[in-house]
Amino acid sequence: MTYRYLQLLITFCFIMITHAVQAITLPNVPLEPIYFEPPLIERNEQLNQMSCVGLDNALRMMQPYRYSYKAPFYEDNANKIAAALITVDAIPIVNGLAGMAYLGYSASVEEKEKRRQILVEQRIALLQQLKAEKYCFE
Image (cartoon, rainbow, N blue to C red; front, top):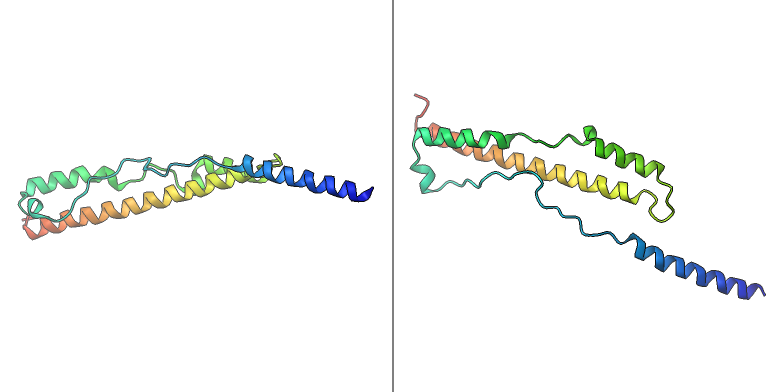
């Protein structure tokens, strides 16, 4: 009699595991840029031929891209909610995985935003170097 119960228990556990795997499958989360990207600037002949006023205008157009419009990781309210979901979530199948997934997504978006800012700073430095080479400050 106990062998039959053990067999039923193993079958039940197998069914629950296969259904749990199907329930945890997450949709693809797009990591496309949420914030606007700066235009590409490379040193080429067209940049070398720009006048001082043109370089000034290009620098002025790059200034809004210097700043991040995303809240820092520890000040973002959505991250606070995700952390609360991890600790409080009582759904048996999920067990806080949604909160952990969002925290990972948020961290990757913040890293991408920091890399974007570094590229902008490098482009501004290139324009300032061209401006200095043309003696635009005199």
